[in-house]
Image 1: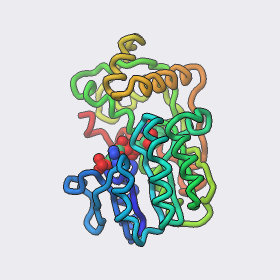
Image 2 (image 1 turned 90 degrees about the vertical axis):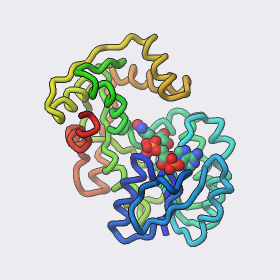
Image 3 (image 1 turned 60 degrees about the vertical axis):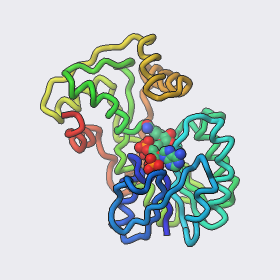
Length: 278
Ligand SMILES: NC(=O)c1ccc[n+]([C@@H]2O[C@H](COP(=O)([O-])OP(=O)(O)OC[C@H]3O[C@@H](n4cnc5c(N)ncnc54)[C@H](OP(=O)(O)O)[C@@H]3O)[C@@H](O)[C@H]2O)c1
């Protein structure tokens, strides 16, 4: 039995589909099971990571857990992550945590706090540390549906965005096969594209000529603080893009090594999600 947190999210939904296709037994945690919209055969249960005890009744018979941490505030991780991971490790032998590269170089980030809690839990663990998700560019969908210009900061920031299906394939490998214990998998797409190039790739996917318009930093700071609901996290995002202008995000071959196929290009992601931009 595999328990999934974040099962209704970008990566979790893909993980559910792949596990169901393999015939695995899946129990999915959602705050709102009635509207989870997960495939038949998946047991959907109510739980909230902000109330760790709500997970306890769902851990019976669970072998492995796919863990997503949905809160960006490190204080929330410091408050709840140990309780969550200890509860899990009392039953399950394996935790696969969807972390981020920031866990390595930002020791006070929530990713690092949760990784330390997972390590201390006593369960076998695997950390997935993906670079930016290609799905982040859905943040432009409203602008693209409304017109041909995307107004956003740091058009020259070059990222190696990764397709959620590649992340899910790696997660399923780590959840269901031996050999990933103690691994910190740094996962990326196959190449870097600047944000401006990403917008043009979406344009090709939807058959339109889309253009970039650089948003001044002050305006971007306000816009992102409102969008994330967390000004500190908005600042982290802006610092990341600023760094990727001079130092493009790294490209790894980890997806290919684990799944046996090259990571999916951003153009494939844009084609797969073209309807969201139409
Ligand atoms: N975006 C990136 O570029 C990137 C890069 C590296 C790592 N990450 C990490 O990936 C994770 C997010 O993954 P995602 O994008 O697949 O998720 P997502 O699409 O943002 O969905 C969030 C999921 O978390 C669940 N959730 C929200 N609040 C919850 C709570 N209080 N208790 C239990 N579950 C809760 C939601 O389930 P319900 O609504 O059904 O409860 C939903 O399934 C984050 O930890 C993020 O830091 C993201």
